[in-house]
Amino acid sequence: MSANEDCIFCKIIDGEIPSAKVYEDEDVYAFLDISQVTKGHTLVIPKAHVKNIYQTDEDIASQLFARVPKICQAIEKSFKPKGINILSNTGELAGQSVFHLHLHLIPRYDQTDGFNPKWVTHNDDYSSEDLAEIANLISQNI
Image (cartoon, rainbow, N blue to C red):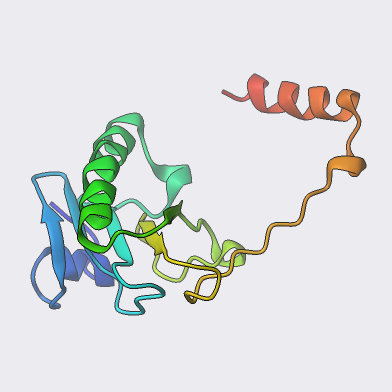
């Protein structure tokens, strides 16, 4: 089902490269990230090769995201994290290094567990009019 012979994740799906598989069905494959930012750090990928979220259609997205709660619940049952981060990087600037859509499920245990997302707010930089304009531009393109 995977389609890109140069893609490391397609090679994992096809069994050419070993992985620590967590879950598999006809549309989705989940396996441990070799970096294990935190214990249980899992990648969830569609079996169909899509580069990133920009190239993902609704069918692939619904298949992928429908499996996330089940896998997160299994991580919670297995390791009892205090929380979980779910993220996807699209584009090099955002940190994407493998160009096959993937979701990171990163269990969180405490403030020093190895994952440190930096979130800087800009509340004072945007007026309600600015926010309305931004929302309108996005809405027009849906």
